[in-house]
Image: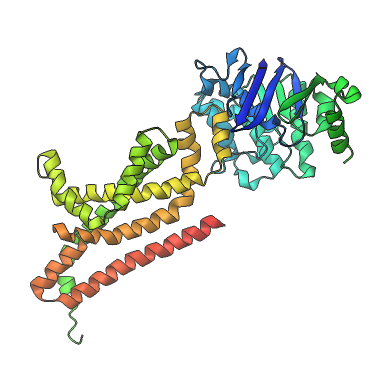
Length: 242
Length: 218
């Protein structure tokens, strides 16, 4: 579904991604973790072309993200993305946030878009909040709306860029529960997160990054038991003891 | 001031109101035109298209470096020359105001657009919206909301500046009042009235702008 081959990227002289190769198959949940500045957010943003890569290539469902012939807008509409800072549209109601892409990109009718939006808000537990504005919701609620907004496009895969890092602890689980449900329903997911509980529960594979490189890429059980690299061990011991 | 004669105002009310209508019409059309053209210029500059963005920047800097009265004067002679027929002073000054104000509005709008977090653009693009769609549905509505007080303040300045049409003799409020003043030898009454009217609308406008500013900053 998502294939990343030898992707590298530079910001001036600084190399943010260094020859990254990995893949996410259909229905698979891959968790990407690593210390801050390791390039994991950059990598996930390259998957839907929000960031461009310097060399190598990335393809989603057979279309090259960095290909000249690819209609990037169309490709993006088929990949949902959830940001660390939610990025709901503050001037629109929750319902309109979830409807916008359906109306303007998928060209659905207003009735159809609204029905789909209402169903998704119900799914993420926010049916009562449809007519509120983002600023009236808690961070956890906003992030669940953002997930609904992504799902409204009927995506073939969902990307999560540290979806719980900006949340108060008591709200993290509400968001993770929604993500676990999604994973169990068979959604293809690529998740940048430090939530190892989530990884334990639903991840198929764990990718560990450090200094722009993919240091480890292994099935979940292997990762948690064996912990091949010293760097990954050190990282895990740090985040698991807290 | 003992012989301040109010009757000259009431006797000439229709004339004065006609003049005020011209002033308001000019202000409103110039604000609308200026914002439309200014938004376009701002978007072109932000999009960083080679050559075109440079031309837009040059346009803005050019008009911001000229006195308004000069632009009004020039356009008064240039527009008929350009079109090959007389257009009337109203349209020539309207064009002058729109061209001139657009330069100022574009700077306000550019600042407004820049104040929207880049994450909002990313979120728009991530659901598949094109760049123009992202601007139209996500960035501009938010930018305009935050800019309303500044745009209004600029409109008040423009309202006062419309009195510069004096130089081409267009019968706006000021010119109408001056005609009456000279004809009836009532200079004091007329120019006091003009001052009060300009002050009233400008002050009310700036109070409203301040109110909006406070409301939006909460």
